[in-house]
Length: 433
Image (tube, rainbow, N blue to C red; front, side):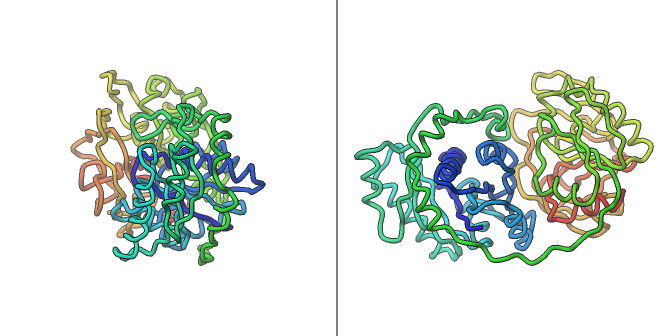
């Protein structure tokens, strides 16, 4: 599977819309595109899947390691992979879009906001290409996709100004129907705010799909991962609008080694019979009343007290807390498994890649002394009991208290860190059941 990366000059240039238009253009040209996302994002991939008809792969060398990133890429299914970048091409202290492109040896197509420029678009692209050589980044910027560009003189001015070695690969015309609304944590999820399909089809007509395929390359083959046996256990995974931040690779790893059953606390499902529970992140703060009344949380509290292993990530941590206070000031009861009161804030409280070191054997996702890499992005803060027990020391990031993460009670672990299956965390969780 060949591929290329759509890297932006900055956040907000329209990489997600450009990615959707490219996916549609490739489909219209008879190709079978596989979407992917550089970095730890859960939201942008939710927009990829409805257009491509398959899950989007999350590619992050910090979370997965170089070999894990390549393995995750090759779990995709198609003839050409479209990797949406994060932020600007070179932005990010430990895992940038440029880093992902380098690990996979994929060419970069630069998405440039051309709404107020013509020849300057070419100058910007040339600067991004030359910066790679000057800064030591192993990145190959091969062309430009002009976002918010009109046709006629505008398009011709951009195309004709590009120097040799930088291909003009099309444009995304400006359209209000292509804009995706946002909120805290980023864009709204794809199920909530899908791009108008007619507008997307019209935009795709201006993308040079065949030339994009021509510039694509095939990454190095990955080293095989460690084979793990089936556990014969049953894992219940929360899956609804409140618990929607789970990587496809995580679901795949769980299904490969256990019997997975899903349930929706928001819809009123009770907790299924199981040997362990995984509560992914998401938006419990937007569904606080429904969760407070959910029978699954009452059952979960009883089962957790009896020693059922429960893993909650970020939103899962919120659901396992004593109570949750929304930005409106309303306080509602949650499962009450973990000794913490959580409140939502008006601005984000943490946004970074993290590294945690397990303090003991109660971490569920790591053994004592092992390090675990993840990502945190949340608008909440937790007040924890004075005698609260923690599973991890924070070596990078903020965690729950600044130097601790992973609240532990019974065999329940709640953490602000999202981790990837390639980290080994979910294998450790399954082996502990």
